[in-house]
Length: 316
Image (cartoon, rainbow, N blue to C red; front, side, top):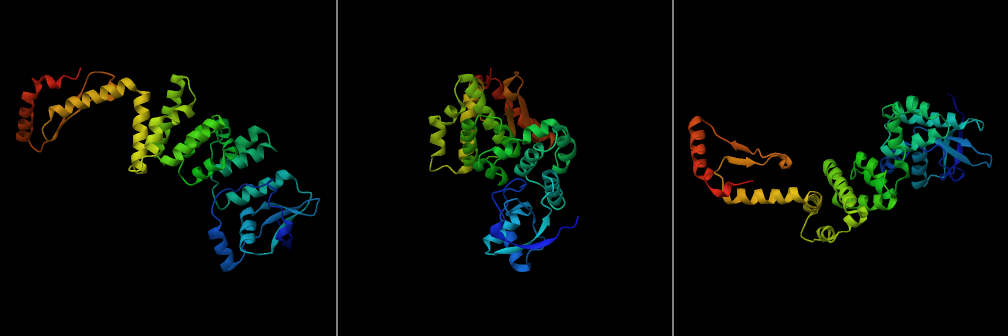
C-alpha cells in the first residue's frame, strides 16, 4: 500500500494518543544511536485527526527517539483520514510482526486492542498465531491482563527478573496481594522454579492459616532475612525458601531435621551415602556406594557392618 509522504512537526503528533500503540519497554538508546548515524530509515505512519493533530499508527518508538534527540520534524507516511481503526491496527500488527517478536506486555496490548474491534473467536484464530501464541481461548485469557499490571511488575517481567508464567499467576491475584508478592520476588531475584515455589508456599500457608498472603510475606522471620546485612541475594533467597518450606510442611521438615541429625552422628565412611525417601512417603531409604573395583566395594561394605548394629541408625 502506497502512502503519501509529508514533513510533519513532531509537536503536531499526539504521543498520548495510544489508540494503535503496540510497543512497550525496550530502551530507546540503540534506536537513537541509529537515527543519529544514518537518519530515519523507515518513516512513521500517522493519521490526521479532525482536530488537525496526528495520531501514530506505526512508529511510536521512532517518534519518541526523534523527540529525545532534539529533532523538531520528520517525514511521515500518511493514511487517509477516513481509514478505519481496524485497518490501522492491522497495519501496525503486520508492520511489527514482519521484523520482530512482541514481548509479553505487547502481546497483551495487542490482544486488548483487537478485542475492541474484532470478535473474540477471530482474535483467537487469526491474531494469536501472529503473536506466537497458541490459538486457544486460554492463551487469550491468560495474556489479556498483563498490560494492566503495575508498571513495576511489567518492567520486572521485561528485565527477566520475574518469569512470564509467574507474572500470569500474579495477574490473577488481588492488586494488593499481587504487589506484595511481586516486590518480594523482585528483591529476591529467584530462578523460575524458585519463584513458583515461593508463590505456592505463601498462598498455601495463607489459605491454611486463614490470613492474607501479605501477612505471610510480612512475617518477622522473612523481614529479618531480607534485612540481614551479612547475607547476599542468593543466600537471602535460599533462607526465605527454607523458612516458607518449614511453615508449609512442618512435619516434613521436622522429620528431615531428625534424619539429618541421625546420619550426621553415624559418620558414614567416605564414598557411602544414605538418601531418605522423597517426602518420606514410605520407609525405603537409598544406600549409595561409590567404588572402582570389587575389592573396594567389599571393603566399604565391611565398614558398614558395625554401623548396622548401632542404635544410631534407627531412622523410624
